[in-house]
Image 1 (cartoon, rainbow, N blue to C red):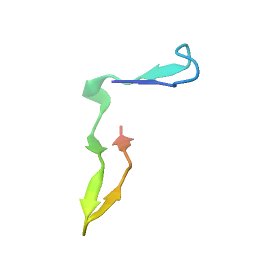
Image 2 (cartoon, helix red, strand yellow):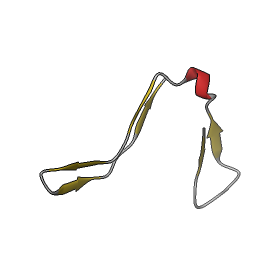
Image 3 (cartoon, rainbow, N blue to C red):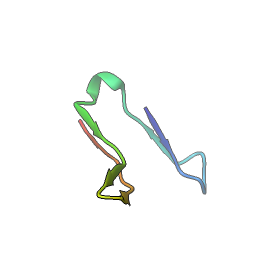
Image 4 (cartoon, one colour):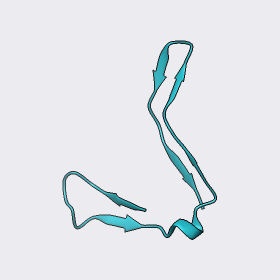
Length: 41
């Protein structure tokens, strides 16, 4: 998994999938869109 900024492609981090415990993603709740993500390692 990689995170790359739009401003500078040189500013990035990589996290091996074997280190990821769980991923939280976007949610549609009662008609409202809640954009977010989180990664727990």
